[in-house]
Image 1 (cartoon, one colour):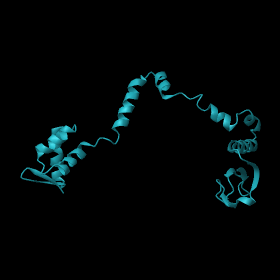
Image 2 (cartoon, helix red, strand yellow; image 1 turned 45 degrees about the vertical axis):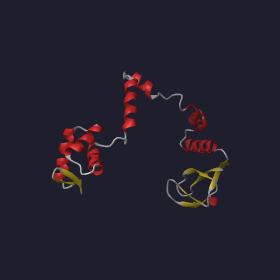
Image 3 (cartoon, one colour; image 1 turned 90 degrees about the vertical axis):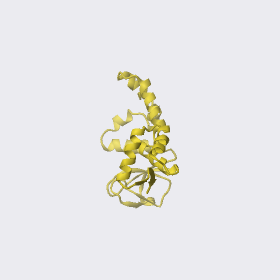
Image 4 (cartoon, helix red, strand yellow; image 1 turned 120 degrees about the horizontal axis):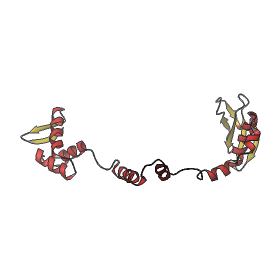
Length: 174
């Protein structure tokens, strides 16, 4: 059940679903006992309630005739996709080849969150390898696409920041 109700304080109109004990005016925030509110229409069809409320608002603004020329909410909802330009058509009309854009989007979707950062790979090597050396960490990282030059710089930064210690060429995370 849907009811179009009005606020006695600010004259706002809104739709209440069901039969709650109280409802709050969306405009002024006053809480009302639902039974005491003026009901302009009660219906089982939400779209009908929306149409009645919209019609009442249009009439208040002196636009009742213009509103009468519009389709119902249900009719507009049915047509919503008719006048929409999809992404591919938009790109084509803009002079952009949509195939490379689509491929880039797919690559981004596949890569998002699934591949760790280069720094995370170095940290994982330090955790997983038994008594890791720089060469062992570099080998581990290279298997995962991280260049050896990056590993050397990352290990030095981690050492300077006090996140790892190096003893006799072996690294340990702290």
